[in-house]
Length: 534
Image (cartoon, rainbow, N blue to C red; front, side, top):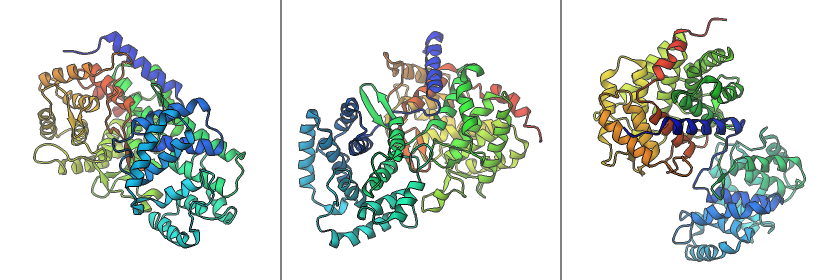
């Protein structure tokens, strides 16, 4: 059976723990594709005069690499126009041929109906051009309608920013004050890079001086979310630190790390727990069910020391029980969350339900028994005749099936359903030994499949051997990392999937280290010693 040597595994585990410890409280990640976000960083940095000269070329390189053959970026008129403006302001000689191709594409695609009002407003006030519309009196009402339609029933920061960009300098002090009040403690607006960029552009247009500390804090938020990826500088869309620390804690403990080594991630999770008992995926984001279940699962494995972890588990379990839907399922966002009430889809999620069941099974709270039974019933009702489970938020049937098999196996009493699911997983294995969905073979899918098949190591011994061999061969010889892309993290509040290579490496570390499932052994003691009554 091919696997990493014990020394290699130890080095990889130590590197992950070092990343977790050194990145407190924010763990930035390089999320590609990034052209539109890097363009925003260039535009805003230039507008505010805060972009270091040495960072311009590293921000521009990824933009150029992601340009399509036809000269556009994703055949998107608004995105291409924003990127063209950013490259023009960057004034990098290597960008000139790319700019020429992009301008040619724009000239050949004059359908202005595809141009979003937000882009038109943003470019008008990040380029020093003043009002962006030549025939302002005619088009202004139409843009107001477009903005209100885009953000109907939602009084978000982006809507406020758009209206400020449409107005004259100093014309609406009430909206300006409202937008200033919406800035969060981390310097962002709504916890993501695009909204933060739009808000700063709007406030600058409204007359706020560039020297105001608000801009320092806002641009610092964008800088914190930038990560070096080789020679490139990548602007991440939002902070996902809590999810990364939760999954790191889980994986390194299952890979044999001692509690003292994994303590930084556990302490950060304890510190970041919301008053409601839940966790957000990162700073500036709303509390969500998925991250809460991940954190509960990880802290349950961590154990009862310090004592605060026991109370944190109880509060998290109560949060999940209260968030459960009537049919036993869980949604990504709790029903009381404001984001769910502003038109965002917030239906039942199989992934959130499976993670909630895993967390509730691990935490050892006796009052969670009914919620666990209802969640298990929901999962079983959604198993297909083939044994698989339909794709959910990450759009991966393989991941949904493995997650459901893990949850049902931990709950108990569903052996036949678990093995039907794992038989389906085994049937999707490629002749090379790897696994994947529509994206082709990926290390993340292979590691996830190994994790699932390890529930029954004797039954799937041959498939496991082939998969581990394949996974080991996909490791980068130089960095010892797994870098092939897979959409392996879902941001509930933004409704977007992200490819985070750290999660692929964590999954690979866990799957290569454990020949059989150790979760039940590690968590048996916490589950039999529930948190005492106050």
